[in-house]
Length: 68
Image (cartoon, rainbow, N blue to C red; front, top):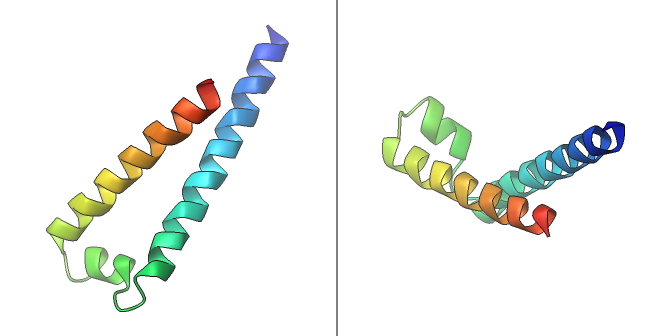
């Protein structure tokens, strides 16, 4: 039981770190636009939907990689 909990926490940490790294990578690949500024201050709903979709897709990929 304890081994399962430790594995879950380790994979959660790994997934979270990968998720954060990929978000900053997308931020760097779009130097023309500041994503946080566009979404939070300019209320760009379309960009928020695109970034949200990217995050969901990335989470599915990370979950599949960890599950195997």
